[in-house]
Image (cartoon, rainbow, N blue to C red):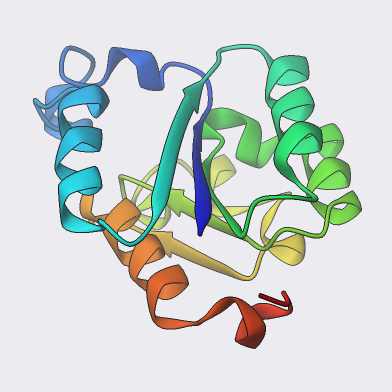
Length: 148
């Protein structure tokens, strides 16, 4: 079962950026741990700081992968284009955030993406990704609308 983890702007700086908010681990290190923890899932990872590139990646995998775990960073709160891309594809998307966005600035409390995602996980640090993957692992593809 192919699952894409898609990270947006500034998440390439995990481990060095605002450690009090985002922790001290790089995503690449954590991704290796996720691959070991979920041997039954074919995990791929992609990160971009560019909105159009994220949209292109959603279009590329959005009709063939079984799931997408998306941390769109600040685009979550501003991007109609990303929300339209999620709405346009068949693959289920789980929106994740490392920090608890509801404990932060008020503009972060609104997600443009959530209405088109299967679920939203916030505030569990990098473990937010693990929780999203557990959702896909426990729900077999038929249960989330895909035929095997």
